Image (cartoon, rainbow, N blue to C red; front, side, top):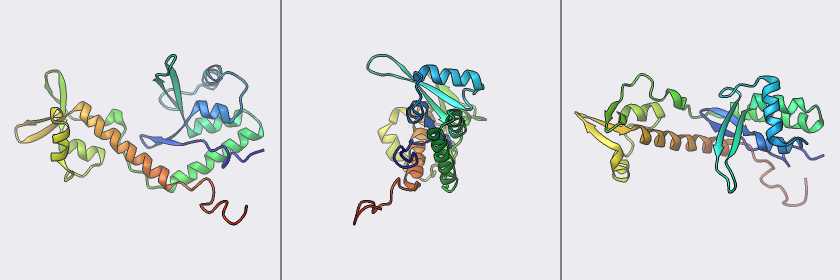
Length: 207
């Protein structure tokens, strides 16, 4: 039987400093005989997993019809693997445990939860658009306030407004900056992970 930690690696993504795994990929790796949609819905109902805490569904477009993508926390993924009560499930669970240890050793960039990004700030409103202090939002997201403002203003002039002596940006552009920072955070995690195989694997004979 192949080693799940190497031959059947499950990608881990990091969102809002939470490690997540795609439930559909997990379903495939566990070789579950039940149709995916039926399997995940039954597991959620039977074991009282909570949306927004244990799993995060999003609707994505496909060529035929919209598909719901379920991203699971590693705790939920481990529990689902254990429920299969077979060797594949045990291997997948051990893989997630190893990944948790690996991620704990990485200094993750600390991003605020996106739903708390604007907490405590009263926005200015112009033409039904919400505007927030530019430097304050840079601080909250984790950018340097000395970063290139002129470059951003030249590329996105419609999202900057000067009010009094302060520069404000739209809510939409704030979220754009946040998601850019999130991509950088994910890249740090991916680059810091151990390789699936030794970098010199296959050179000078098998190992």
